[in-house]
Image (cartoon, rainbow, N blue to C red):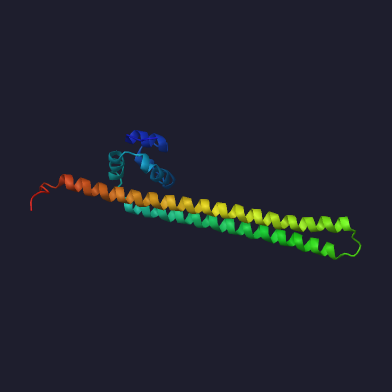
Length: 170
């Protein structure tokens, strides 16, 4: 979708005024930037005199959220792998019993193999999750960089429009 007015952008963000632009909505705004007309983006960013401070706070909040997510993911992974190890230890102790017939032994061995497959699947799932998280961070950082470029470019354009000197004079 192409955003051709400030009102279009506000509606998409679910806000009435730019004062209601929270950090979460700023991230959404940053992600929308490629679809916002340049003039509209410049007009919006002009309304943020402390854009740099806001952007830095936003980056800090994104970093904290990312670190928190990674930490929770790491703990979850450790608990899962520890649980699988404990199950295998129990199954190995069962295998050590001398009174098991072949079918019982086969069943236990299959359960040990199943925990290995589960761990492998969990590892693949975790790698997909981390890849997705990395992509989100890259998109967020790219959006913030784009906002910074638009902001700086907008200031340069505004200042050059205000400059009474003709650029062809030498």
